[in-house]
Image 1 (cartoon, rainbow, N blue to C red):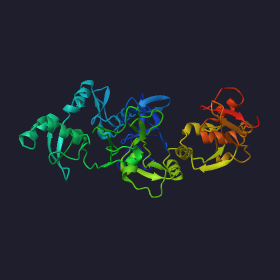
Image 2 (image 1 turned 180 degrees about the vertical axis):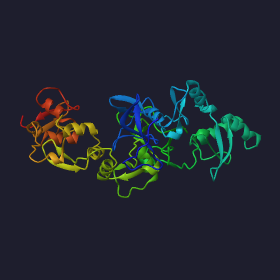
Image 3 (image 1 turned 180 degrees about the horizontal axis):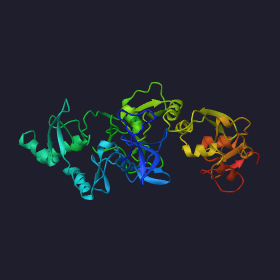
Image 4 (image 1 turned 90 degrees about the vertical axis):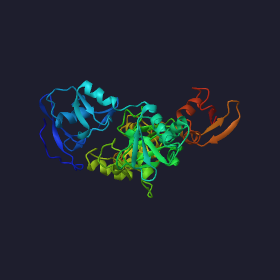
Length: 419
């Protein structure tokens, strides 16, 4: 067992921290009963691997749920696995974990039946949402409808109940219907405005869950990102971050703040009470205060010709505004790449005495003419840079076409205007 220590960071309600022991040796890491890991004042980033959150400590990977159990729960029978009691592998709160044998794991798993037609459903009061009665399946619920003479066809009744569960109808036979395991006390559901996802019938909850148009509830999907800690979901083949959908559904944003902040620093905790709209500078300040990062550096964006375009409070804000991947911006800032997506990015504090103009300047400032593949003149541009931005064709391709390195660029022929 690990000994209790005092946490120097601001704790969550009822949060307890303990020193982590590995192979009988005390480490510099600490684990909380809320599933958080830290090293002194700095939170350790968690990532999703095969459905479970894990961390890297001293160059070794560990599952977070195992670390919590190791610190807080004795294991006298030396059981080899850790069971998530509610079957949610992302819920690493202490009260949701227990040491278990393989047979105990299987027994718990069998209680949650994911076969849609045989999943238990609840009949609810249409107005209050109060639970009235549970049924083993749509079929059993349909039988009740027939026995109580709400309908004549059991098959039709089962179909109508399933349509309510799948958000296709508001109610059926004067009742609300939901899957059994989906009811959480105090949970509130609101439809996600279609302005954000371009489709109706998807709902978000104040507990950070998303209900699909099929009725399935999910915190994430199979395309959960592998490089970041945020949970995401795919809707109509487009990936959305769940924390943004929760905020957009429940919170007003009159100041049009562009970012969403996790107040407790845990990026997969998407409960409404843990989220807030913030500016880039507010988000950066919070990250420093909570120990998620040690500092935030301002970023300046330039055109390829060296013209200063805009300043940002952080790489995260620059990425959000320009839709350019943050890692690409970071590489440009430290000089690993000269430009990204037709722009140059530099740390603002490093600008004194820095020459922004690159060896590409003489290339991109040359005037060019755009032709169709049949040789018809379309338009003249004062510089390759302007042509690239207006046509969305990379300047390198335009330049290569002009010097004969390739036949066309973007389906057009390009020539230097002076030629």
